[in-house]
Length: 283
Ligand code: C2E
Ligand code: MG
Ligand code: MG
Ligand code: MG
Image (cartoon, rainbow, N blue to C red):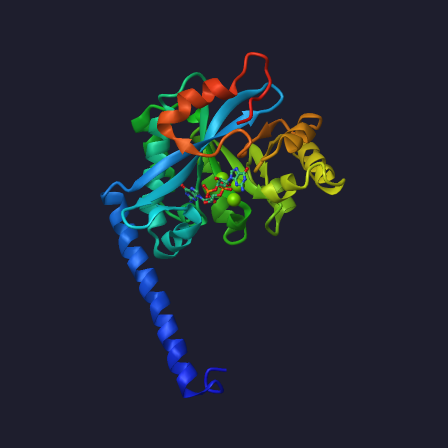
């Protein structure tokens, strides 16, 4: 195809590749600097028990305050961090920061940290998690680790061993974005999950037809039978919440309750979201 396009096109194509490579290289250099120069920040999004109307925890979501580009969303740099292996030190930093922040939160409020497949393949992950718990003093049952099911596609045996070692530390493991990957049901059977987070794409359609309601109900029933709880991701509207509240799924997360906020806002968020009447305040 390159030859057929002729000499001019070929050179253009080559230059195009060059610019892409250059942009990646710049981003990689910036990413290396980001930890040292403290440009990362962990934001927190509330996880709700919608039956009780209380905040049960927060998901840690990484934010990058780039000196020139401003706030860079994780989708724009996590893939490169994974390719370059930089996700290992970055992920370690997130774990430490999240445990440290959560150790100051009231009561039993927990924290959920996303762990990349690359981190799961790292020989130091279990030590890293253990060290983050130790140095923060956070009780291990207040930490939850979120992994996506793509993790399970390769090295199943190795992954199982790591997940059990993590569980032995006393924390719990959630499957993130359930329903978007390949081996969902097989993964539910094989891996030691405590919670399944139902992907936003199924929550979007709640109340608009029978399909999404049926899927959320069936997944929740199945998970309950298998000893797991479910959480509905990406709840944005009162109608979606209403549909969930008449259904069986107990936990939810989404912009309806709050977007991810800096650690300094946690106390205020807890007050705002945990109404004495037991209803959830949307804002
Ligand atoms: P995720 O783990 O599935 O996190 C949920 C994402 O959905 C977050 O995007 C959150 O801001 C967004 N979200 C929450 N509620 C709603 C809603 O009601 N509507 C919509 N449209 N979106 C909602 P975010 O923060 O941009 O993160 C994207 C992904 O980046 C995460 O998806 C996770 O896979 C990854 N990520 C974020 N932080 C980390 C991290 O510290 N380590 C690793 N390895 N991955 C991370
Ligand atoms: Mg997540
Ligand atoms: Mg998710
Ligand atoms: Mg996601």
